[in-house]
Image: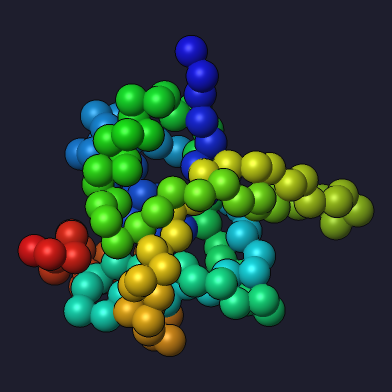
Length: 140
């Protein structure tokens, strides 16, 4: 069985969300995606990432995702996102150690919707404080 890796930078970092979407809470390790920025999506409480050469997005690398689980995650993310291959850097374990680059999937905001990613920052803390009470999908 082929297992996948996924870079999560938004709500998929929360085990309670993945529990609801795929039936199990997922854990990961800290990772960074360079060349993108994260921002709050307009009229929503979730983030999107768009290309920006000098920016970076903190998140986590989740491993051991099955193909069936990946398809459920695709459905959760919906038409506003597209799943693409990216390379993330895992956190350094010590100051003299080089970061490790890992290829994985990530959900980027669709090209037609990139202007909906605002300059307003999105963080897990902000989402936990207020966003979780709002909408979970773009259309609801």
